[in-house]
Image (cartoon, rainbow, N blue to C red; front, side, top):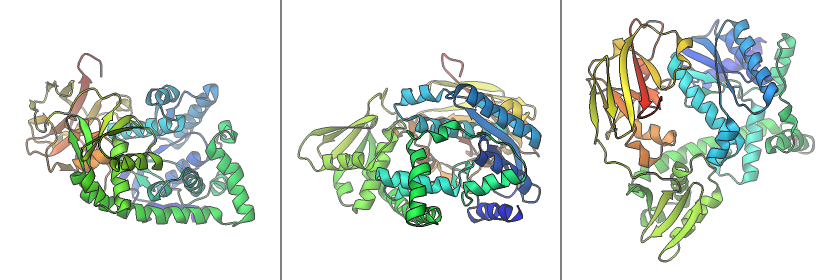
Length: 470
């Protein structure tokens, strides 16, 4: 058991998954991987410089009574470990229908939204999930079969935003052996045996075949290939980011691509920039190689042309390609067209974003009580210099997002979180009188403003839609 703990500890340190003194939530589905992860982190927190502060569980409303029992397992585990429990429910099938994407993609999006919300509301730094080296190998094969490039073949990242994967270097059988040795119960999801699901066919048919006929260590081989692809993809993405702003523009409510500028780039960078532009308007739909090539081929046509792409249409207009959302509602507003003073206590209407932002002093919150508050964040008042301002983004805006290791630009944060270009100038930003960013509404609070055990006074910031409850 000590060897397993040491491996998880090394993974955490190697990838800098948890900051010193960090507060960690663990996502528990009820299955073996997540249950084992919770127990391993609980043991590590006794000796390592972080705190395990809660269990989170998202009910997907997909499997009836089985899903209810999964939630019961997660709740019971939190109770046994003496941790706070945070649960929410999302109709993932309805979300998939609304977004016209797969149930799996909708589930991932719903979980990430839930995790980010809970971390902000309870003052946590990370959410740990139970992906293993087996998941990494399966993901690599799935994406290889689908025809992914280096970014897709990068597989599962050790960290993505607030989400961390401390057992990504551990196999699924090793975690089950740990659970069995300690008599720890878990649930087996019957849907994992459904061979109509591609991942399950890879898990139960393709990987065993490769293991028997080609290499007994195929899982580790594929995981290493994912590591190599990730390093290559990170370098290429950084290179693409350096030139994206002069190739991709927003004009009259649509994303436009400058064809001469795109054509001057190496193919690897051109494809990355084209894909990034498509992802922004895809609304969560899958953007594949064929979509990127369809856009690039449109650039090679003479005169006008049009092609339908995920969530949008691309039109050739002279030397540019214009991407327009299928359900685009309105054009973007110019930058810095709104800025409103917000007193404490007080409220302000931001007509440009169709919201009302409220600020009020509050007692130090019960983090569990805050976990279900929609559109509300608690800020440590000691880190604010009043009055506050609610404004649009400005060039050069930077902050350290909650749980992030350092500062970054608001522009990069919007890109990473796939905020459409046409909406970025409407996202309200709350600053204090020094100009320091406190809250990017709907995205993140500043790390230095989070609630900690040292917090003595709090300002509660809330946002509600005009004409609605939030």
